[in-house]
Length: 385
Image (cartoon, rainbow, N blue to C red; front, top):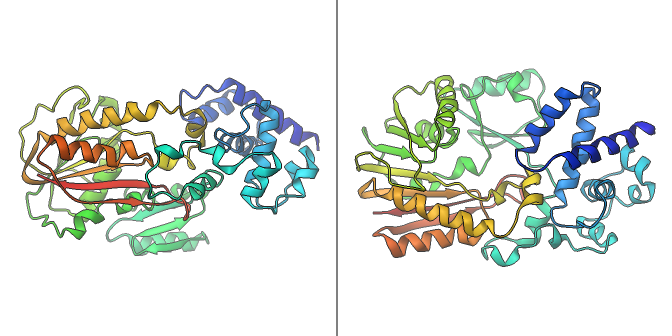
């Protein structure tokens, strides 16, 4: 019994030390490395309590940290458990209530978790989005071409429980250690289900990716979208860029594992100026920096620390990046704008700005909702010059 209170005290100390300046997973890894007393089971339980705290978002902010952890554990739990029984047996008896009913126990509404309804697009189901913040999304992997059979065979050989979403997409429990059995980036890419779908708009337009089709991923980050577009359309001429050399260094490591060799890369800060490259790209992929609000159920510390004024900050940043990137698009070329945000100003608002300020024509836009299927929510818009 005492160990459960020890878990609570440890989680409280960690949360009081953490300031939201880096991903919580990274912070937690460093914390446990410096504090060797935690065994693997201890680390798992303490981390769970911390994430329950974050999943409440903006709800019950006035509670002391330790009490808010218990509230988060209760609201996030779907069945009775030993920790909650030790910390608050009265609440443990009520874990069978719905999420909304559990919030009412604390005289709160589930919408207090995510209090920015007025900033959402009308396409988002608000209460479902709020409820999704209380649940850890699943893990998705994209099977690379020719590797489908070997990946499934490896998963089955260790009795991993998985579901096939599509012929190339597999869903697994989030805690599955797939990197212990699969060669990540060589055989399969860890990539959210909806992130795998963002090129559907291009496929609907039946764009011809003939030999020499020039593609620029202008905010490439770790290269997930670049690997995807290269796998879908292997005859393209690929160029990637991002704001820092270190980002591209990590991308290059992934590309090497993925077997992608024929590409160009360069550093560019498109928030300040257009890239110093010749125009003429057939497709520019702009997976823009954003609030990440469509992924907060995966990283709930971002939900907890988010402030509303950041929406305008990201919207203005996205407009600058998009305008500067478009300078390198050739006539007849496509501009694919992507975010993992649910805020209208970062999505439709940016698209409307581009339609007003450029000669681009909208070909289609889509929200890929993930809040009802334990996946991320993404937005994509396809425009043509």
